[in-house]
Length: 188
Image: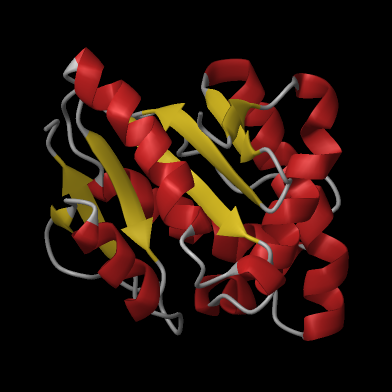
Protein backbone atom coordinates (compact mmCIF):
# COMPACT_ATOMS: atom_id res chain seq x y z
CA UNK A 1 0.00 0.00 0.00
CA UNK A 2 1.27 3.46 -0.93
CA UNK A 3 2.07 6.04 1.72
CA UNK A 4 1.01 8.78 -0.73
CA UNK A 5 -2.47 10.25 -0.96
CA UNK A 6 -4.25 13.13 -2.64
CA UNK A 7 -4.31 16.16 -0.39
CA UNK A 8 -7.67 17.71 0.37
CA UNK A 9 -8.12 21.43 -0.37
CA UNK A 10 -8.82 21.93 3.35
CA UNK A 11 -5.13 21.02 3.87
CA UNK A 12 -3.84 24.02 1.93
CA UNK A 13 -2.02 25.43 4.97
CA UNK A 14 -0.52 22.03 5.79
CA UNK A 15 0.83 21.71 2.25
CA UNK A 16 2.14 25.29 2.35
CA UNK A 17 3.85 24.55 5.68
CA UNK A 18 5.57 21.43 4.33
CA UNK A 19 6.85 23.29 1.26
CA UNK A 20 7.88 26.36 3.29
CA UNK A 21 10.00 24.21 5.60
CA UNK A 22 11.44 22.15 2.76
CA UNK A 23 12.54 25.18 0.72
CA UNK A 24 13.81 27.36 3.56
CA UNK A 25 17.45 26.85 2.51
CA UNK A 26 16.91 26.15 -1.20
CA UNK A 27 19.26 28.28 -3.37
CA UNK A 28 16.48 29.63 -5.59
CA UNK A 29 14.27 30.43 -2.63
CA UNK A 30 17.16 32.24 -0.95
CA UNK A 31 17.52 34.37 -4.09
CA UNK A 32 13.81 35.21 -4.43
CA UNK A 33 13.38 35.84 -0.69
CA UNK A 34 16.74 37.03 0.69
CA UNK A 35 17.19 36.90 4.45
CA UNK A 36 16.27 33.92 6.60
CA UNK A 37 13.75 35.86 8.70
CA UNK A 38 12.01 37.36 5.66
CA UNK A 39 11.91 33.96 3.94
CA UNK A 40 10.32 32.43 7.04
CA UNK A 41 7.56 35.07 6.80
CA UNK A 42 7.13 35.07 3.01
CA UNK A 43 7.21 31.32 2.40
CA UNK A 44 3.79 30.52 3.93
CA UNK A 45 2.16 33.22 1.76
CA UNK A 46 3.99 32.11 -1.38
CA UNK A 47 3.46 28.38 -0.91
CA UNK A 48 -0.19 28.86 0.00
CA UNK A 49 -0.67 30.49 -3.42
CA UNK A 50 1.19 27.60 -5.07
CA UNK A 51 -0.92 25.00 -3.24
CA UNK A 52 -4.13 26.84 -4.13
CA UNK A 53 -3.11 26.80 -7.81
CA UNK A 54 -2.45 23.07 -7.53
CA UNK A 55 -5.85 22.40 -5.97
CA UNK A 56 -7.57 24.57 -8.61
CA UNK A 57 -5.90 23.28 -11.77
CA UNK A 58 -3.67 20.33 -10.98
CA UNK A 59 -2.95 17.70 -8.37
CA UNK A 60 -1.58 18.04 -4.86
CA UNK A 61 -0.31 14.96 -3.04
CA UNK A 62 1.18 14.37 0.38
CA UNK A 63 2.75 11.50 2.24
CA UNK A 64 0.57 9.84 4.86
CA UNK A 65 2.88 11.05 7.65
CA UNK A 66 2.77 14.67 6.42
CA UNK A 67 6.51 14.86 5.77
CA UNK A 68 6.36 15.68 2.05
CA UNK A 69 4.15 17.33 -0.55
CA UNK A 70 4.14 17.76 -4.32
CA UNK A 71 2.20 20.16 -6.51
CA UNK A 72 1.61 19.01 -10.10
CA UNK A 73 0.26 21.47 -12.66
CA UNK A 74 -0.66 20.86 -16.28
CA UNK A 75 2.13 22.13 -18.52
CA UNK A 76 1.88 25.78 -19.47
CA UNK A 77 -0.42 26.76 -16.59
CA UNK A 78 2.15 27.95 -14.07
CA UNK A 79 3.86 30.96 -15.67
CA UNK A 80 2.16 33.66 -13.66
CA UNK A 81 3.69 37.06 -13.14
CA UNK A 82 4.84 36.79 -9.54
CA UNK A 83 2.01 38.95 -8.19
CA UNK A 84 1.08 37.36 -4.88
CA UNK A 85 -0.45 39.55 -2.20
CA UNK A 86 1.90 39.94 0.73
CA UNK A 87 5.16 39.81 -1.22
CA UNK A 88 7.46 42.80 -1.41
CA UNK A 89 7.78 44.51 -4.79
CA UNK A 90 11.38 43.31 -5.26
CA UNK A 91 10.40 39.72 -4.37
CA UNK A 92 7.50 39.78 -6.82
CA UNK A 93 9.86 41.18 -9.47
CA UNK A 94 12.43 38.43 -8.97
CA UNK A 95 9.67 35.84 -8.91
CA UNK A 96 8.17 37.21 -12.13
CA UNK A 97 11.54 37.04 -13.91
CA UNK A 98 12.10 33.50 -12.69
CA UNK A 99 8.60 32.28 -13.63
CA UNK A 100 8.98 33.80 -17.09
CA UNK A 101 12.30 32.03 -17.63
CA UNK A 102 10.78 28.77 -16.42
CA UNK A 103 7.78 29.10 -18.75
CA UNK A 104 10.09 29.77 -21.72
CA UNK A 105 11.84 26.44 -21.18
CA UNK A 106 8.83 24.18 -20.69
CA UNK A 107 8.25 21.54 -23.34
CA UNK A 108 5.60 22.56 -25.88
CA UNK A 109 3.73 19.25 -25.78
CA UNK A 110 1.13 18.23 -23.23
CA UNK A 111 2.85 17.30 -19.95
CA UNK A 112 2.59 17.49 -16.17
CA UNK A 113 4.91 19.90 -14.38
CA UNK A 114 6.11 18.98 -10.91
CA UNK A 115 6.02 22.60 -9.80
CA UNK A 116 7.23 21.95 -6.25
CA UNK A 117 8.28 18.80 -4.43
CA UNK A 118 9.36 19.28 -0.84
CA UNK A 119 10.32 17.11 2.10
CA UNK A 120 10.57 18.58 5.61
CA UNK A 121 14.18 18.85 6.81
CA UNK A 122 14.05 16.01 9.35
CA UNK A 123 12.97 13.53 6.67
CA UNK A 124 15.21 14.58 3.76
CA UNK A 125 17.64 12.06 2.26
CA UNK A 126 15.50 9.10 3.38
CA UNK A 127 13.80 8.33 0.04
CA UNK A 128 10.56 10.13 0.92
CA UNK A 129 10.73 12.59 -1.98
CA UNK A 130 11.59 9.84 -4.44
CA UNK A 131 8.58 7.77 -3.34
CA UNK A 132 6.29 10.77 -3.61
CA UNK A 133 7.55 11.67 -7.07
CA UNK A 134 7.46 8.02 -8.21
CA UNK A 135 3.76 7.84 -7.25
CA UNK A 136 2.92 10.61 -9.73
CA UNK A 137 5.28 9.28 -12.39
CA UNK A 138 3.56 5.88 -12.30
CA UNK A 139 0.20 7.55 -12.87
CA UNK A 140 1.45 9.73 -15.72
CA UNK A 141 3.31 6.79 -17.29
CA UNK A 142 0.01 4.87 -17.34
CA UNK A 143 -1.60 7.86 -19.08
CA UNK A 144 1.30 8.11 -21.55
CA UNK A 145 2.03 11.72 -20.57
CA UNK A 146 5.56 13.13 -20.13
CA UNK A 147 6.59 15.01 -17.01
CA UNK A 148 8.78 18.06 -16.48
CA UNK A 149 10.45 19.93 -13.62
CA UNK A 150 13.34 22.20 -12.78
CA UNK A 151 16.10 21.01 -10.47
CA UNK A 152 17.15 23.78 -8.11
CA UNK A 153 20.19 21.99 -6.71
CA UNK A 154 22.69 19.31 -7.74
CA UNK A 155 21.18 16.92 -5.16
CA UNK A 156 17.70 17.23 -6.61
CA UNK A 157 19.05 16.81 -10.16
CA UNK A 158 20.69 13.53 -9.13
CA UNK A 159 17.42 12.25 -7.66
CA UNK A 160 15.49 13.22 -10.79
CA UNK A 161 18.02 11.55 -13.08
CA UNK A 162 17.70 8.32 -11.07
CA UNK A 163 13.95 8.48 -11.74
CA UNK A 164 14.43 8.83 -15.51
CA UNK A 165 14.49 12.59 -16.04
CA UNK A 166 16.93 13.95 -18.59
CA UNK A 167 18.21 17.48 -19.12
CA UNK A 168 15.82 19.52 -21.23
CA UNK A 169 18.25 22.06 -22.61
CA UNK A 170 20.98 23.88 -20.75
CA UNK A 171 20.77 25.11 -17.19
CA UNK A 172 19.60 28.70 -16.78
CA UNK A 173 19.83 31.35 -14.10
CA UNK A 174 18.04 34.62 -13.53
CA UNK A 175 20.35 37.67 -13.37
CA UNK A 176 22.30 37.37 -10.13
CA UNK A 177 20.45 34.17 -9.20
CA UNK A 178 21.34 30.50 -8.91
CA UNK A 179 21.29 27.98 -11.70
CA UNK A 180 18.31 25.73 -12.41
CA UNK A 181 18.30 22.67 -14.65
CA UNK A 182 15.14 22.03 -16.71
CA UNK A 183 14.44 18.30 -16.93
CA UNK A 184 11.94 16.24 -18.88
CA UNK A 185 10.90 12.60 -18.51
CA UNK A 186 9.25 10.58 -21.26
CA UNK A 187 6.59 8.13 -20.09
CA UNK A 188 8.06 4.70 -19.40
